[in-house]
Image 1 (tube, helix red, strand yellow):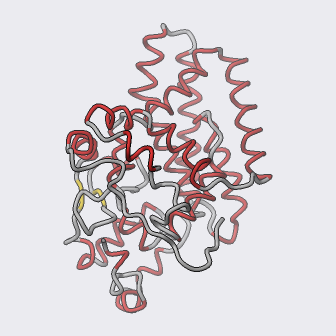
Image 2 (image 1 turned 120 degrees about the vertical axis):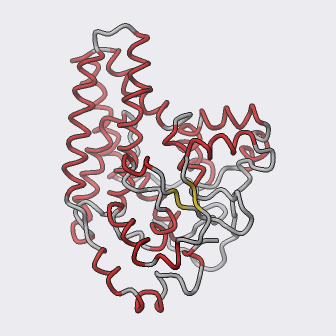
Length: 312
């Protein structure tokens, strides 16, 4: 099931004693702040550029360029959810900054993602808790090659609405602020730049989180292509655009280490990670998921959690 499930993993007591230098990596990444600001400004420039283009170029630009930026921004928000920008001592700074990073995506989700993602780490695969697990309907219906292809395209919609069915939570004041800030930003984009810029923004998110090479990470992370292995890392070049989210065994072992340092974790504790099954191509993961009749949304480890749980 990966290094994270082993009692002798590098995150265990014995592992920490063996590799004390890993602890020095548990600190925020200030470069993350500037990278996100530059990504935000880049998308603002793109919003301006596309406002007078033909519709075909708006959609083309949304898929080829905007999708990469927006998907990367969702993974920046993933980093922020772990307080990687300002550290745990300034947790609220991370929440406000997450709302800022959320703006070019077009749909408010930063605060909600934080709440559900912490449950994912604490209770990986827990039935009714971990909303990363597809619903029974998804597993039952999207079981053929064509239907799985459609499921991949619609992944962002399933990720958006699945929590409402699996583990609905009362809305918080931060989520209200997130919604108000996002809707205000969307209205301003429409008012000053027009409908094409707004469509570009939303299409970039929908296309970038659906049938897109980077979206391979959704399936690569926890789908059981090999029996007994629940979590997989990816060591390909797209890590450069995704804050090393591909280093997923390493991330689950050390969720408080920023993505930029996860390759160092693998290097330091190579004996734990180098022999684990891993991927080098997210495109191949998507292809295999769609074409392999033995893999479907059901191909996840689901646990029936016992005892009291502390949820976000």
